[in-house]
Image 1: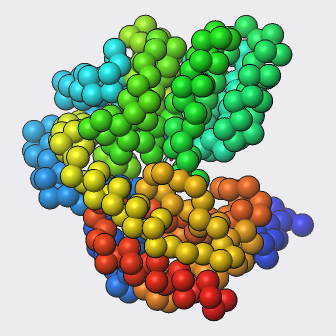
Image 2: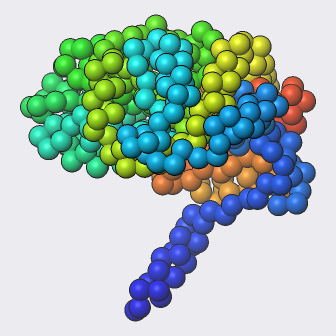
Length: 387
Ligand SMILES: *Cc1c(COP(=O)(O)O)cnc(C)c1O
């Protein structure tokens, strides 16, 4: 077989397992009511939890940022691509999260790819929740440290692994809110274990930042946790409505990361105009209690009205409200039936989730209305009843 025919066979194999993904094309800004592939749809897909992605104030801030700072950064941060507005954004994020210092990146993927390799190497060990985001898994591989994965949320298993480890340096890594399940990691217990075993604790708050805690300060603020051994990762493309990410923590740790993280050093700085707009996004998050109250009301409504028979509503207290179906093809069929009803809910399949746990991933936004949520529950009831 030639390389190309081999690759075609792999693609056909994917298709046979109902694993082929296709992209839908939107012709309207991010929001619940969207024109998708030419059809008017009601969407429950995005991570735009507060409805900021198309917020007029934020769109105006991007334009204002471009007028003030131009279009691009021109170089990496350590060469000549670091602007006063990046400094302001880092100071604001540090203050907002209650950390000493923050370092801003282009994407959360790059933060998570780079941290472990900066803190650890051969002879060290990483302890990771089995359901962590793919970027954390890749970051662990890149670090060359031993990679131990514990069963989801199983702090007893983690404790045993830590006790049995002779690694020089240890790092515990977890999502705060698990992106395909919507549940929250036992952060206080994880920090206690980090203390007991002298480990770093990296918390990826991609889905908590802006949503959880007082003024949306995130999952660690919600849990009342602060410590020099904590590294907080936040992303700015979800609740913050834009793009980018940061890591925050003790000033010495952040200094070390800035000096050594390859995914920080060897990439062009994000446009300063974006940093300018992100300052506005943080203001909107901080003043966003009404948005978070709307979001909480939608969660309540969905949980209060959705009555499933074969499918399973997963236990979640966040805007990520998955419905487990199990079989890949059945999950795809359910998503297709919803689509025919004008409702856009993604079917999530392996390898994004473990085999046999294919699901509909409903994500709620403050931009939804009560009527939107009841349309969804009614459609789910009807489709589950008529397979
Ligand atoms: C989205 C996400 C990331 C990646 O962030 P980007 O800024 O989109 O690259 C990292 N971790 C988790 C848990 C995420 O959901």
